[in-house]
Image 1 (spheres, rainbow, N blue to C red):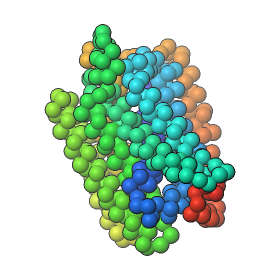
Image 2: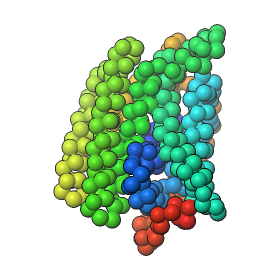
Image 3: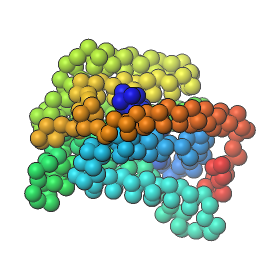
Image 4: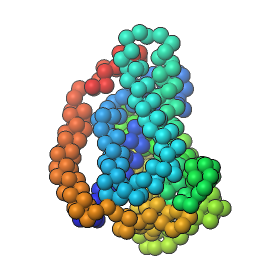
Length: 346
């Protein structure tokens, strides 16, 4: 039953990256959109993120609950030594959701709308940035369980060029996912071409940031290259991710705007598989060794109960989520005015 729990943990992280990442990416796209086009961009992103807006953080909650219940040592270590970036990420999630709601439902249309827009866009950037920083910190080996000063325990554990590069790569990936998803929601050729340019920009940014990740890993003696290219699974995953990216752009320029979403999701899945496979089950690498998903586990009965709870829960959650997406796709197109204050996302 342990591996059932681990599969749910990995899947929830992947789905949060795909769905929550695209959600954050919509705000990132808005951040890098000119004032002339920003109103139309918002109108398009509302349609795109509507089916997952209410549900995307469910995957993050599931991952946290799994760690808290099934792997308390891993959960407590990350909560203590990475509490600063975790707090910033959670504040970003709160600020983003609050700003999104207020800019929709604020009864008074005034200059505050601009403040809501800025908070939404910048928190959409900051949140995945720190999500990536946390992920990079977990495998960087910088966490010192024997630290005896504030800086070594709570700052140097996550603040490095490598973790920053992973954060920027995560931002670029989120922006790329959002641009690809938004292409399928456009209403005319001009708008489609504009989002294609956004996707190209974000794709280039992801490649540059990815190179930065490898450079900083090399400089900080993190064996990222061997993790990815030191086994056939990693090599195959990267090869398939590359092929899917080429196929994605080929189909996009052929006018196939729906299937490219699947290819983008597949590409991110392969990247996550390549990065995590070789050092599995060591989910957190610290200066003194590692924290393992197979060694640092809770009580056996707790793991069994957790596995059954996840299996039974998925029977309710997944069909409901599928119906949510289906209902949004089947409903008539939203009549979204340029004034974002009067948009009803429900």
